[in-house]
Image (cartoon, rainbow, N blue to C red; front, side):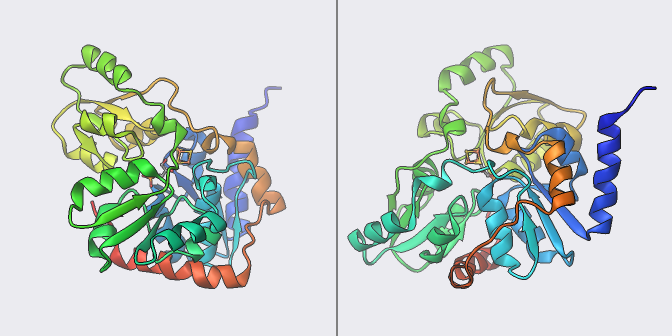
Length: 308
Ligand code: 13P
Ligand code: SF4
């Protein structure tokens, strides 16, 4: 007898989602098999809106720690699960509440804009959150002329290009996956695909931004590739993005960056999603007082909306 273990697991996951009244949210960098089982796939901002909208009892967040925490802050009364406890974004761990408190003392008049890639404790000390999809809009719209921007220095420098009348103080954090994409690799790919626009995530270095045809969040990449007349695109972000692009725009070609892989996002396998639903693990727990404070900058961000 031949067993279809993957097929069985897929059917079990679908059944469990119904039984447990769970919604599965997946980030664009998740493996294809997980994306295909999710109710919604998107960027950090889109998934925050889905988390706010859902009437399900349980949210299973196939992504990384800060994304599941954000869903919990938005939904303190729901069960929020992160299927693999090692799915932790290293950039979000590059600033903690103590360091931010000291940084704020150095710039007492500055507003704190924290990238959603931060811990709940850091959000609790912030004025407003942002994602790569609305960082420019948010920094432009807040009244303060000085801005502490944590933790991604590359996103902060990108925003500063568009907001000349404000002073941004960046924290020196970074995403190793995006920092690792070097201009030389892009130049080589361009030799093979001379007509392909280069689409770059704003967590990449300024050198990469300088040679991009388009800079955008992961969701913005889909819109751009759909609307642009070109047939082939070089996608300078985590390789999970290619699955989503191919699925949404099957008649075009997408060239990935070799080794642009985020280990944290790849921790969530089909087995983890299955086990998460069966055992209701790993439940995101955040103290009430942190939730109350962190909710304010997240709500402000959601009210301001998408900038691209
Ligand atoms: P997006 O919000 O653009 O999906 O990016 C999230 C992220 O972690 C990028 O590294
Ligand atoms: Fe964090 Fe970078 Fe992975 Fe995004 S790609 S989750 S910023 S390490």
